[in-house]
Length: 215
Image (cartoon, rainbow, N blue to C red; front, side):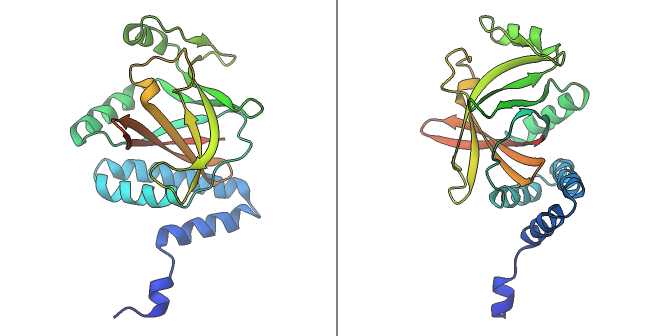
């Protein structure tokens, strides 16, 4: 029989997040590094234990906070695709040898931003979206798929405030796939951010993957 103490005891995920945030008060670099390593390990685990990794990532995401004042370039990783098991396996195989997405750039003053892509993505984008043009970035990368940002409750996590990364309002974005995506981002500790890739189907959204941004 569970005791009252057991019922109120925080989960291991919640306890670890609390420890990381306590550490961040005295050693932010170490806390950010540990949070990032945790997210990477969950991504590795998703290859063998898709459901277990997804459940832990969901719990971790729900414990996050909307990042405030995110500004400038960030480095990104695809943590775990969650489209369909066989497609996920193919996506993992592809991105292990060629990862076109490098992260995102944010402009806090204008509440806008864009995605940072490798130069090789330029020609792939032309094949998929012939009328769309990527831009040259200051760091030798291509910039594409501009977005607007705002803070509001998560679409699938209404109890958590998230930074919405919205592609639909930007008229230049391709209608095929891109405008149907709504990214949501939360901060685990400053510098380590976990995101969901939500895809609009009919009148609702489904989570098709997790990503992470290092700022």
